[in-house]
Every structure is written in C-alpha cells, then in structure tokens.
Image (cartoon, rainbow, N blue to C red):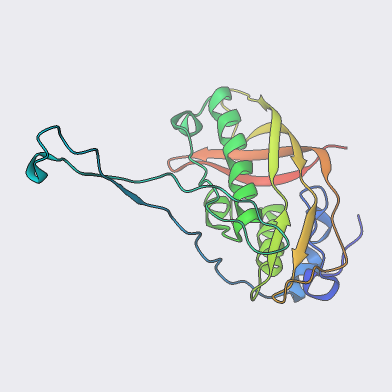
Length: 222
C-alpha cells in the first residue's frame, strides 16, 4: 500500500476503501470541531371548539413534530440526521449479535461522515484499531473549522458473521457502499478533489467482553 497526503494538505477525504493507506499520513494532521446541532420543530395544536362555544370546554394539546431530515448540500450542512440506535441483539455474543453490531458500527460511521460527530463510532472501536482511528481523524479534519461534507452516507446491504464458538475474536464480512464525498469550505466553495462513490468489501474483526462488542481491526477484502 502507499500513503496519501493528509486532508489538510490535499483537502481530500479518503473513503472506507482508502483509509487504510492514509493512517501514517494522519500523524501530521490536526483539526476537529463539533458540528452544530440541527434545528428541531414543534407545533401547538388546538382542537376545534366544542359545540357549546365554551372556552373552558375546549381542550388543547402540544404535539412535537418529528424533525425533517435534510441531507447536506452546497448551501450547508445536513440537518436532523437520524441518530443510529444500537439494537439489543448487537450486545449478544452470537453470530447474529456480531452481524447486528457490525451493521450498527457502519451506521455510526455513516452518521460521523454526515455530521462530523465521531463519538458513536469511537465508542464501538478499540483504541488500537488503526483503520478506525484513521477514519476518525480524516472525518474530523474534513469538518475542521466551518467546513462540511456533502455525501459520504454508507449502506451495508450484506453483512455475514464468520462466528467461531469460543474464539477470542470474531470476524464479519461487510459490503460497504458509500456515496460520493465533496468537502465544502466555510465560504461555500467546494474543494476540487471529489471522492467517487465506492462499493467495497470490508473485513471487520471484533472482540466481545463485559462491555459488549468493539471493532479491533478493519481492512479491505481484495
């Protein structure tokens, strides 16, 4: 493999299929910044008055409307990105639990690309997972200052656990489809380098302990 120039120098964010080769380059990168939370919407609903016309007989109710998800575009950041929810099955030390966790982890990674918030994917990653750390650092660099990412959303249509009873670590193969990525500057101008959409196979190695599953290694299937 060959290393890539860090994002602060080439202003290009490697996708999941390329991060393995960028980890060494990240040693010279820095950046970050928490994304701004998207707006929420609420509405007060007042039912029609009763036939008696009495104000005291007219009930009122406050309903919270579900915020509308809006993907990022050239005009600004994504809004109201749905927060991934880890299913209970993902905390089970079984083949099905491994598969559920792997799928959830990539949902957390997708959320990080769309929002710049890497906390969920970090929580499910081991401290020595270089690939995971490379993804985290690249995402933070892409979101530094007032920059934002358009695209990068991930889908995992196929997840297959290679579970072996009693093994200290388990493996899962994951089909990873990621949207094209463009990084926009604070002034709204895009960086010239665009990462095209990818469709790759990844091998996730996970370990289960008292706190649940964590990804301890990640790589490409070639």
